[in-house]
Image (cartoon, rainbow, N blue to C red):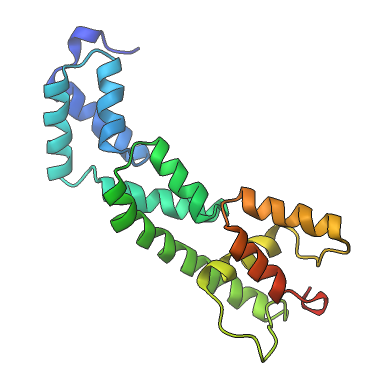
Amino acid sequence: MAPELCDWDEKRLYLDGLRRLSRQEYFSKALLQRWERLGADRDVAAAVIQRLQHDGYQSDQRCIETQARCAVSRTWGWKKFEAKLRTLGVAEEQIISIAKPAWLEAQSACVRSALHDADANGLLQADQDTVAHSLDVDYCRVVWLKKFGVYPVDLHERHRQQAYLMRRGFSGTTVQLLFGLLRPSMC
């Protein structure tokens, strides 16, 4: 049973915060909005969030890093992840200083794992003349392999695969570079 609105004192908010944060990461802004909707005083809720942060239970940086790992596991590109953070109200400076490096690290780990797994099958062997390409293209290739894994047989299928990758948040340039590297013998 939910507590009455007038029962949201500091202790109760702190315990509610611990309960919520034990299940998943929350942005401080999300906790504040949630408690305000339930009738908690804004100043008391802000003080509780500061205490949770001081005690190490709530961290916006840790929440962003968790969101980045989830986005990569869902095969989201940077654009889609960035848009998601903006809808959650993450500040621009946090997107640049925390989210981008966290997403790149998660992306890199995903690529390393996939390259290691697929290398045994010869799926990711590029031509010897191919110049080193970016991590974005490698990650795009991993997503492409996971979803399709088969070289497009015609132009319609190629456009369908490219559209899928662009909906996942990859730039048109990255998708074009990937399809420039793909060869029918690689699949």
